[in-house]
Length: 562
Ligand code: NOJ
View 1: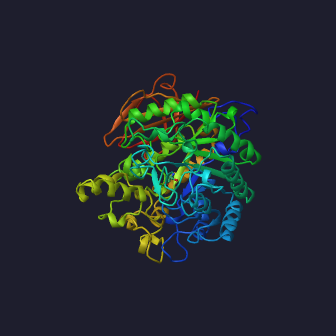
View 2: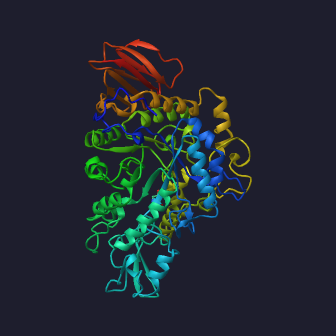
View 3: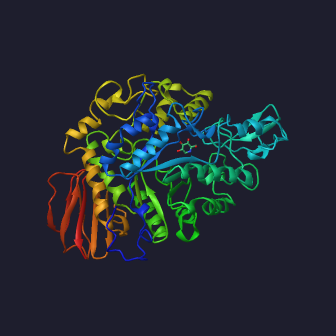
């Protein structure tokens, strides 16, 4: 961890008061695609244990594991049927205990992914709830009468389907599902539901879990009135409804504050103004959040838009709260494909994006394989895709009479399966992921892009990640330094300063296939600069700065005394 002795106790920085979890770098493991030890074609917890030394070698200190609870697997584990059991394909409770222990032995922390908004439709709570209108668990979910014409109660869509309502013959009512049909939404207005969830959280935290990633948090509170939306496609109405922050403050009082943990909320449709309500330290809700103004709302790279998003968030959170920095997780296309250049500049581009994420204010997240510059994938047939969201959209569009080929082409670029292909360990069969038949096909480019190759190549994306992450551990400026964008609305060059004490780091990124240039403004123009890190081997080590000439996708971190 960082040497914080030159940060005085109680000092307020860009990220507020120095605290261990603000200095962390998180590595996300989508375990079902990480490493399979029993040949069933599905990654498992033992696979994570086997690869702990690799993970540790990156220099990260937290592992976020996607949900591994028992689940029918309609949405790859986000439909939980037993919060206290481990999915057999993931392993056993003994494996979880060993994973926590082995991780801790290596100085790695474990972050669990917790699904609070919904359960599986096979969860005993839901089975009871749907059994009769008088069942004590009826009110644990959201049930409504049909509209007068017998149709769904409102015109609201779900994330995955044309309606968020599903008719249930047994009792003649509809239940609400914001995601898949097999993921009924819980009724958080019911205090019994909340207490059941707090009990479950304590169970895992008492086991020694160090952090929680809280799924679909913005959806916990439901709309006050159940009436048609003017535009059903703009599903913001599912999020940020009154009562949400009361639940989070209660959750903090009942659970979080009793443990020395890190919490991060997945907060869809968070603007900086809304976001600060979740993470403002004074409010005692969450430690940090993910917002989705980039990953969900910016389909392709847009430098000016990205810079504005970063400025707005930095201004809103300065000294008050913390956000995660990432460009993709398991729900998005891989960053070098979607936001960079995964062809002739794949290596430079992957390194540039990494430089940016690790030097902007916030906690950097690395999604498995990102450290290799893994790319998205295009499968030739819909049958090769596994993602429930993609499949259901495909059916909906083809059902409207559109050409299946055209719909497939349209859905491919943003399919969530782009990031779910197996981790590429080597050039061999199934990318070294599994001895069996993988649940999803590996990306054919694993023959060139894989861990083995990257280890052997000193210029690989992998080695660059190690350097970047090591820097963060040594230099408080990278974590706590203030943030100032000095590149205005330049559409290709992004330049910003992180400043802490008398140290200034200037990050200059040329996000373009063409060469670029950047003139350092005062007070940096006349300073002697040191190159901290660059993604081209022959960048000047020392320069008296004026104008920087930049090659395509060139990234440099410079430092000077101010
Ligand atoms: C967000 C998760 O990241 C995603 O994979 C899942 O489908 C939804 N929440 C529903 O739980």
